[in-house]
Image 1: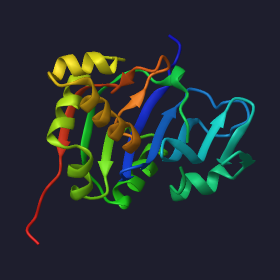
Image 2: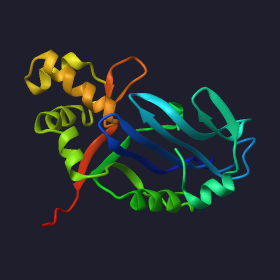
Image 3: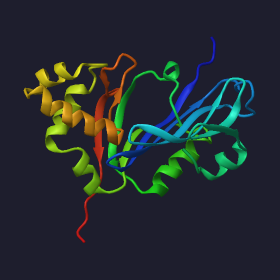
Length: 209
């Protein structure tokens, strides 16, 4: 039986209303041509839906980073051992992930998951917010309804989301734009809205000041 690629980590770290880090790490049965390690990854920082910094590896190119329009090689050994950096997606390698954990996470938590993934340990899927205030600001009660309507639905048009939540198209469109800008949901190749998970697990603890 042919060995298959294994998804180790998929995480969106929301750092602001219009900025997020996108982290995806796969373990491959064989290194990609041009790479000396057994991973396929993309690590990117996105602002206002534009990728401003990306680390990744591609067949024949090896490990490289994109800074704006510039593309330069870099040393993966250093990157993989420190967990520093940020990429774009290769949708051909991204099957649906069943459950995503939404919660609050420090930068150290995200970095630790990346390092464990680069050691071959499966971590799962996460949408992590820097603060609880940011979570409530981005995912309001009405936007939770939108998110639940998208969960397990595959790519879906905004008008259909509006029908499912029983609200007018204009207000739902505004909520989806906020979720897109923050990186909580994404656009499918055909322009419809996609939340690629079948279940949501919410996990965070609130403590008194």
